Image (tube, rainbow, N blue to C red; front, side):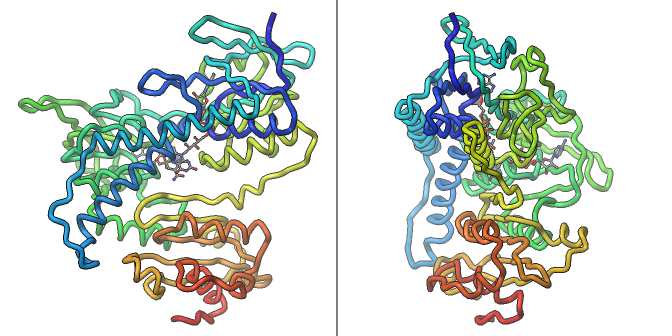
Length: 480
Ligand code: FAD
Ligand code: NAI
């Protein structure tokens, strides 16, 4: 006899666990299948985001920023610190405890919402009479479950380079890079994307000499060009070494006396053969959707050329009752995007009519300063021949930023030339991850730059720069 559920969710990352909770709130009988094992062997909810992504990386960012602040900037405040030292084991234990609090929190939420956690690997077996049969293969063997609605939220995993063996010690993807046991003297990173910059910055702040090898010739191509230019300048000043436009060749570990290090052979942008020797290497060249062993073929589903499951704008696959959300489908691989899709799908199953405006999903890169944006950038507006006005205001002219010792960066607002509707907001600054929320709200409500300019912003605060940038679209910034 198989167990029956109204909604079966496969995967308990941010997309799947939120879908499960929302579906349970709406009165459905819900089960969520999850197989993730933490390094201590325990099964864990929360997916990539909580276990080896957003949460642990931000915990390490905070530790490394605190270390750098004490070591390099305490003196600016007149504070003398004898010698700042970092205990990596303790830093990692703190990170692990943050992760554990969060993942245990989801277990609590599952119990509270009466969601059944099926522990194991899910695989479609058959579609019959409008319901789907799924096998869950766990430690104790396999069990069959049935549901009329299935939400696939299986997420993604790190893309690896062909021929480069990731051992998570000397050569790591995001998983290994979040658990180094010491500060590498020389750290190599392949890929100057989000992970390379965030984790590269963590280890640079802790003392590593970091070299980032990037295949593209342009830096942070998804950002507004003014932001990527500023970021490249600031990160270079901080000591991150970039080699752009490279082609990676052989990557191997070599014994040097008593230690083993990594050699990355590559061709630089000028076509010259180069070798980067480093103590550890992080490979961060993007992520690929998780669909292996999911049995999609058993129910007539397939992946597209990018390995993703095809869905419409409401995350519905070609099968009635089967949805896919989060990193396993098109769109940005961001936790909050997956969460919103989880809510959307649960509510559509309940007959509601929600929708997501993908143009209003904010992006954040947690470097220092942070980078955040929502909507379109100037390159995109130029390409679409949309007439727009641009307003930019620097944090250098903001009292709170100066008081915080964070004068770098700016806010740039792009607004339609005729209607003044905000089309995009681009920020590079301390606290950009929080500042961008105002821009996302404004865009969801189709606000104009004038609306932001008219709203009273607290003084002194970083948010005043948002208002000044809005005023600057009409050439009437007040403090410049
Ligand atoms: P996942 O979180 O990948 O979860 C999928 C789950 O499905 C996994 O737990 C997996 O075990 C399970 N699963 C897969 N197949 C099966 C199966 N057949 N049976 C049972 N279970 C299965 N995003 C942000 O928005 N902000 C950030 O700051 C951020 N930082 C990041 C930092 C790093 C280092 C990384 C790697 C990613 C980061 N991301 C961040 C991206 C974010 O983690 C992902 O976008 C998010 O986790 C995707 O959620 P998801 O639920 O789709 O998939
Ligand atoms: P990414 O897509 O951000 O960056 C990968 C980089 O590697 C690109 O610049 C690409 O040009 C480069 N690259 C690809 N192949 C290469 C090769 N063979 N040689 C040299 N360079 C190569 O991917 P990343 O950093 O791995 O992150 C994956 C995803 O995880 C992100 O796209 C994002 O969706 C998510 N993420 C989000 C975070 C956030 O929201 N703050 C933080 C970390 C990850």
